[in-house]
Amino acid sequence: MEIAVVISILGLIMVIVGGTLRNLIIPSTEDIAVKLQESFKFGYNKAQLTNQAVLFKYDFETREYQFFLLKREEGGLEEEPILKKSTLPFYSKIVKVRDIGGKPRSEGKLHIVFTPQGTTTDLFLYVGSDSEIKRTIQIYRYGGKFKIHKTEYFPEPETTPIQKVSYGLDERDEQVDSNAKPQSK
Image 1 (cartoon, rainbow, N blue to C red):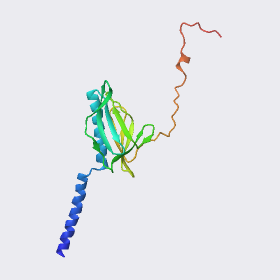
Image 2 (image 1 turned 90 degrees about the vertical axis):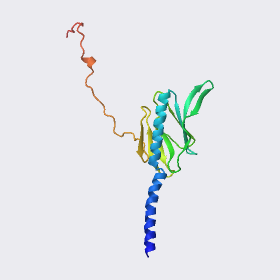
Image 3 (image 1 turned 120 degrees about the vertical axis):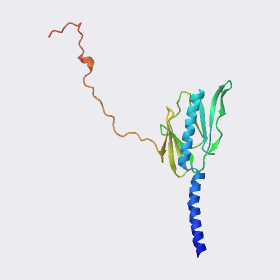
Image 4 (image 1 turned 180 degrees about the vertical axis):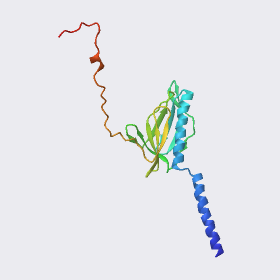
């Protein structure tokens, strides 16, 4: 009887400790999204510091991504790797990407260029598994701003109509030329 109680307590402790260790060893989707966000900040800053464009490449099939420094040579542009190739886990990959116009893409390779002038492309990167999108990384075109949204996010167009603003009479109609002869009636 006492052995059964001891084994039950040990089993309970192992379940609690195992769950805690799992969170330390296997990163969550939030951790992956933050890692990608920090990587994008690195690419943005590197482009401005080196005065050369930085390219982020992601392959949807293999879930691998890498950063390259774009160098202009006589033969054209050369891609020099600046970070080692990384692979996203199957449960937290970039599922699809959507540009600001709303066009989604989830096949082939994704290229994001960070320019020395501090610009890139407005994008929404959807991170999660094939069955569920858990985070959205929004990349802003200017200023190196990146934002993480919970679940799938895409800004909805405003439904309120634009108010017409009336400024009254046109000021030019009220102006009087002081050099003109007064009109007689």
